[in-house]
Amino acid sequence: MTFAVFVPPQASERKLPVLWYLSGLTCTHANVMEKGEYRRLAAELGVIVVCPDTSPRGDNIPDEPDN
View 1 (tube, one colour):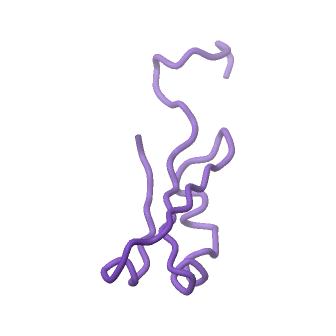
View 2: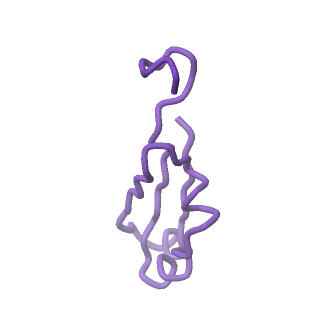
């Protein structure tokens, strides 16, 4: 699985809550990382943000033949 993680500075001092950001079906983990403006607020609030690739990818994924 491909994913990205934002870890604020407070993580070196204490345990922090984790927010899982689940993008839309055709999005990758990079969508929110590149376009989202969440890092400043996550750093201020002390929240770890995990952004997994939510879409199945590869040749062996069952779907419509024309997708």
